[in-house]
Image 1 (spheres, rainbow, N blue to C red):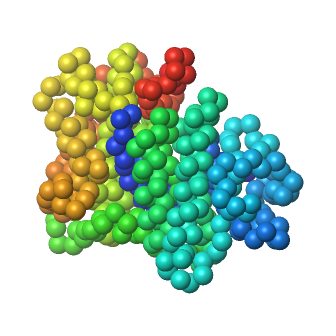
Image 2 (image 1 turned 90 degrees about the vertical axis):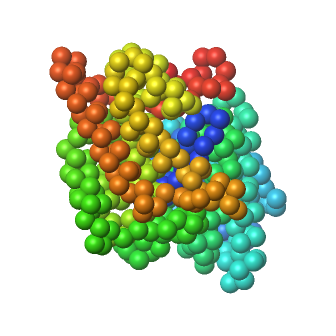
Image 3 (image 1 turned 120 degrees about the vertical axis):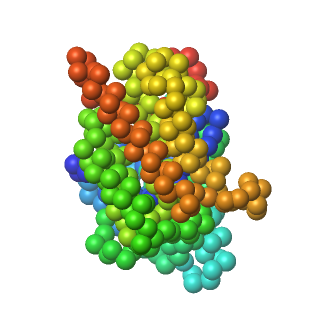
Length: 382
């Protein structure tokens, strides 16, 4: 198999569930090298043609086989060549799903209906697999499904985000869905994919031109994130890099930064509780922060900074839905100073706390931020 390479996150959104916060990531990378336990790719739905496509060919090369000869277990298949199949590949670490669908016709309504039907079979199949006792996937990585066959990028992103959000709100085990847009040198295409998620969620980009206070905070954040002790821990290091990349864009999307800031804050809280032998509950971020305060790990007044990132990063609270949630509809320019300042303070608190562990260095192993809620006894990640 190809060597694993670090994927670049292009954009991210969050979903709240009874099992805690969950994330949907749009990333640029190689679908063959992801470490997610469930991987999805697509092919055409023509009855008389052999399976084909860029990822299909790459999978066949990587595993040295012909997918047409691989055992394909139908999960949800409205017809013999449409739907989702479980492909029994010789991969001990991951399971593979193949979605088959027709290409675009150029008719907007027909194409959207075709794509929605295919995506429905995908997440319906994932739900069916989760009902089986031996399928407990905590993350999924999928290609954007027939992305080179004429479908609108905006439509694809909108349909995938809606379906993934609905699934993550109800799934017992899955905490993350990642959508891969492939490896490409076409910068315009990558940028189009990145902004398509913003458009799907109604996000408004911000410009820092002429705003010296916010620009100063942004520049300080980039420096702090480059030097922080957070980088001693693998999961924190990845999120720091993602945040830095977002902060350096010419046009910022503050909702994206807020979500990544909350994600970093969650991981920081998990590390601090772990190092102090306190129980971390993924489903109760507010309770975890309060435990840091009540245990004397952080000063009681400093918890306000953690709670600020918790609230600002919860997109389900700030995403406008027919005016039901009130105004403002989402994190915007007026929240930039509060967001940046809170993030700076949380990172500095973590760095100060790290210095107190001189006799007990921070453990470098990854902290698994997963929920055991809803699982049978003995099946937790702990």
